[in-house]
Length: 452
Ligand SMILES: Cc1ncc(COP(=O)(O)O)c(C=O)c1O
Image 1 (cartoon, rainbow, N blue to C red):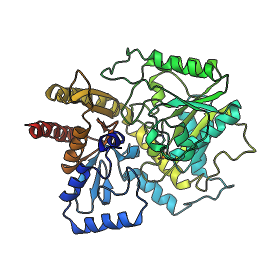
Image 2: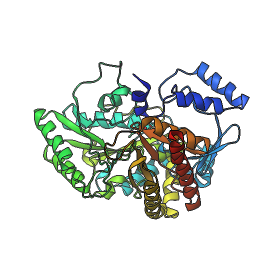
Image 3: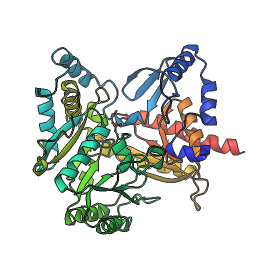
Image 4: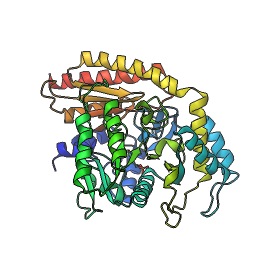
């Protein structure tokens, strides 16, 4: 695979731009630790070798051990309410002194409260919960439950989708890079095209034909499809389907008794300006998977929430995880939800959306490199192209912009090779947003200088 192809997954850790980045690192302690990291961990894509060594984090910032700070517009989607949120830290510290762990077969008050809180926030009927130590495990539980409920083993998902890195999750996922050399995977998975919405951020975009593919695929499976798993809005490159798409998908799933499993692991809890992204669409899932920001960027915790009538697997272990009912995770999640509610964070995000849209459109007017801007809430994608007509992806340029921004203290991910994905903490202020856009502006200018 050539470098350009590999870059479609984001920055790779052996590209020329990465090697250039290492040359800018002068602090010997950083270099020593990076080397020890490389010597200790199994090397893998998008991980070791690492970019930098972190020492601390606070609010919207991560700090490396040489004291440099970066606005974190990636944060693996755990940082909705900012890093080391003082309200959450206080609650977690208290819980550490009371009950940090709860062995299986016992329950605890924070876990019960969290299950009740989530089901109260979700639509009526979605009221059976299982917690897990990570999003991938919640996906695994959902897939098992769908088999039990429907008696059908086949699953449909989208090309290019990611639902976690375990064997079951990569089997349903649609990204080839995660599967290469790892087969055979579990059978009966079919992929359909994602509703990709290039240069069209309004809800009139005609993506119904993408939904219709779902029905065709279900009908061809002789009634063996039990579940359709999909992100409500695709996180990696911010693909926002229309209301009509979602209405049609919901109709098709109900008509064919196919469970609709929504993966909102990276995008729930305010990222889109609503507590859950499906609330934008007037539809309800049969099962929803949550995670990442659920633990407030402090404790790993994820959840699967399903309809009451699916509580029929009492004799099977659907999610037999050691840290299943983590009191610490539950306390962090409860505090995170309370913080969102008491600070009216969802309203702030909806106002920020308008501001960001305006600012990014100004950037688009200035820079021919920008082929598209899409976003909702505080989840944005800037697509870089070599030419607006042909839409040819500006892959190496996107990587350059990423490292330029990193150098100036702005961290984000590139996906699909040319999409700058911007997910700041939801607590970000307007001046901080402006600082980030200034850095982006400079980075895009620097591409022209390079050409000249
Ligand atoms: C859409 C989606 N689903 C599932 C997962 C897996 O979550 P985790 O890494 O917590 O296992 C991720 C992680 O990036 C994700 O983005």
